[in-house]
Image 1 (cartoon, rainbow, N blue to C red):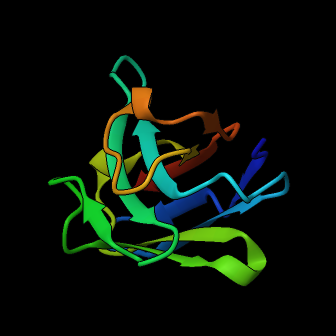
Image 2: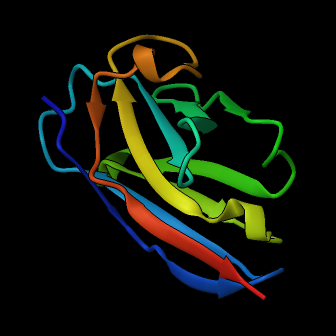
Length: 124
């Protein structure tokens, strides 16, 4: 099974940039699609971005489209989330997830494995 470890969270000013990493340290043969979600206090978990494993198809949530970019390095079993033009409302715990499916996945229920999360705080 996949074991996901996120790194790269922290505090950044409005308009700044931050890149999150998610490394799969477990078995990878059955993992097809990776995704990023986020959850702010008192809110539901929100879809951020997803990328398929073999053909790099990507899809983004409306709130981050044009500002965030998801990418992956199969050789390193790592998925990245590049976040630019950060806003106060981007503050949340960001979770990496892996899904044993082919194609994009935008719902939490489609994912089989989750990381522990990493905090991103955007301040003025």
